[in-house]
Image (cartoon, rainbow, N blue to C red; front, side, top):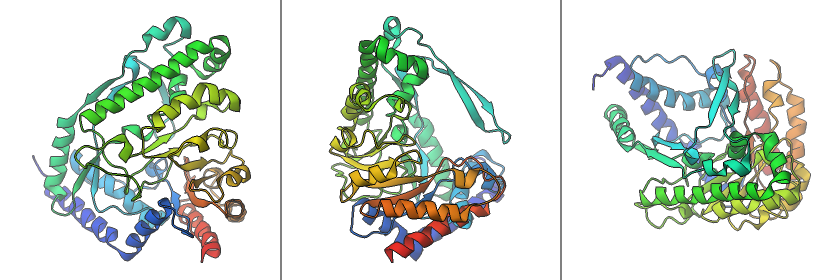
Length: 417
């Protein structure tokens, strides 16, 4: 491999700095906080997370490496550098380089074409699907077993490249993130047929809708069996994203065989955001049984993203034996959710409204103070975590990041110290 010495020196220094931060007392303290939080120790201070994924192009420094592989490594470490310098939330700096497994899937062996547009920063922003199904009863035959393309050689080759550059500083950890957002059957249904048609089909041809969701559930189970059989699952019980902004630190997942990870060893993230327009009873009929069929395979479950869960929590979600976290979005009735979750072992995963970060240049500090105080008063008898996410722009005011975290932390400290 041709190596640019300057690039190598840059990323090696970044790796050394990353390892130094990972071993710091503050980082070790945060890691312990996460384990205690997820494993439900009493009176753990709620962790605070501010996702920077959608903001990364706005806040990251320009990359200076020239070679493709070193730019990839530089970009990886840049994420943690930016987080430390601009945000300082409770994310834990990893002491490893995470390389995501190269796996492609062709859902139901069908082409679901997506057309997108660019925003002012060149990001894919708005999009639409060209829906392949226009008559569900007549076109169910189009759904065939999902095809998985495991590009293991490509993954291993890249891991070896990265290891050659920084492997003596920190280990390279290959992880499978396929299931971060995979179990979102309603989103998939909408991509297949459109939201309006899905809503109408529940009335016009309910049995066909059931057959579609049943197919998706059974197909997902077959994908899981394939991944298990080929040892393609990786643990997410440490410093790994488990969906919807949270992290997987836990000692309560049974890891029976590190050489053959099963779904029972893992967190699952699932949601049904697109079904918010149907009644609680219809959710119970059309959606929940199929999601439960998948969740029963996993060790722990994080449910939800942006959908308000208050209507489906009592009668459905709390019947999941392995439910551990519930997303309490900005659209949820947080008082109702808190009443259901108080004094339980299910974590109240509060999502802060994106209005505080993304509306304009300014920062409504008093508004955020009132907002967080309301959340804490509602969730005082719950296990709480606070997550800022889905912020698309700061309008150039990067100071809002640390201000939001600092303000939230001061309020949390006033309750938990």
